[in-house]
Length: 421
Image (cartoon, rainbow, N blue to C red; front, side, top):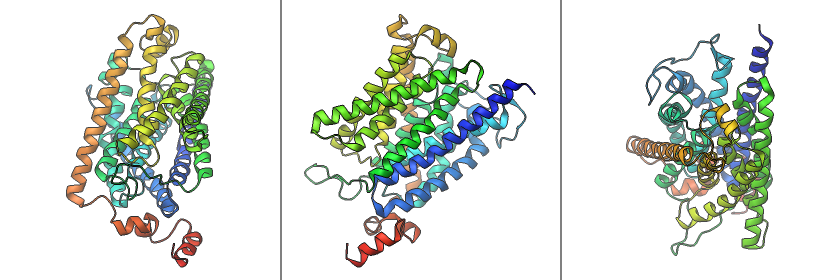
């Protein structure tokens, strides 16, 4: 067996494990950003819905993305089992498991719009529908020889395919489910329903940051030439710039170095560089991350003013930063890297507006599709299942007890109940 082929497969399976471990980061991030009474629910539903997404991806997701079909959707290779086939220089099973992890991440992002108010049944059904009919279609358009791929759309590791798609589904969910109780006052003012554990949130961000090297650098799909190191460098620089920029802007605005904003800045930098990490120079990665850190803060404030309740900031971090990251290649893609990875150079390298126009088309088409189909699916679920949201009493008690019958922190919550808290 060729040694490079073997090394490629070892590298990508390690990266797949890193991307899977990002789910641990999401558990800590989402649990830490919400209230104690929902922590066990958040952890449990993440494991269960990732499991569901894995089965759906095996059954139909891979086929819809990579199967032979048309410019809109793939129509073959369902119930994938071609373990010895080579795709992208990889064993078929290795390629499959790596791509599966991206689908699971997109679903977890989507569930940010459900946090602290959706019934467990809503998570279960939407996990199946999103994994079959939302994510695979967008992924086919861009990564599976679909119509956007034919236009030369640049999205190396998924600012659009994964992050924007998940965020638009989250937007649909949070609009349909409506805000959490107590989030907004009648006069329009906003109450800060602070998360219960900033240490969890920070550790979650760090785990996601580590996992992102599997996400971005792994998307090289090979070790030959060690280009994955260059991608990792851009990823690190953008994340660092995003964290610093977000801390700076919130300090200038409020006089306090707000921890959640700083953490969201790091994530925004990571999301933004995901599309462009293989197309831009390191200095551009710093610029992309810096702008992402600034705009994520503005977006957080914008959604509050619009009375859109986004408990874990999925819309700001994955949506707005995902849009910026996708568009950034239209400005900063270098001629050499664009030629190496497909597509044209960006505006600042003499490429004109062509690539920026392609990137904009991809954002608009993918965002609208993910949002509209998610709305249709959620409204259909509501018509069949009844309310997708827990009752007021259940929301007050917390989803740990109302949906699972036990608290994630049983001793702490029992003490509060005894004291009448």
